[in-house]
Image 1 (tube, one colour):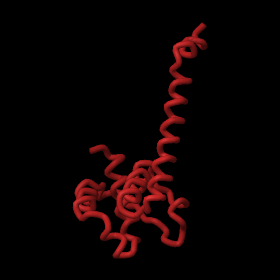
Image 2 (cartoon, rainbow, N blue to C red; image 1 turned 180 degrees about the vertical axis):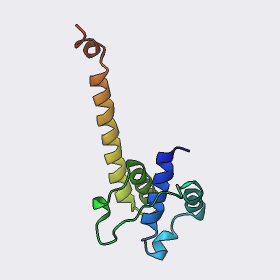
Image 3 (cartoon, rainbow, N blue to C red; image 1 turned 90 degrees about the horizontal axis):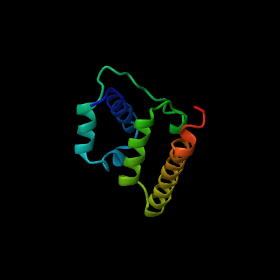
Length: 112
């Protein structure tokens, strides 16, 4: 387990601790236990409950985990569809960028 993900699990647990109890218990205990077992116990992470989550300084990995939890346990069918479409579009954009960067015709342009 990489240190990056251990820290992300710590961040996720801190964020989840601010959920109302009925929301928190929508997440299976096994998932919560996994995060607790694999978190970085030396990493101190606190959020400001007065700020929106989007304004908090969280890692990309923690953000991805939270999105996954939202899709799996909280989102309506409509929200799931929208999020999956956004994630698909982002992935397509990344793949397109890779095709441009690693295009055989472009790789050696700067070398000539």
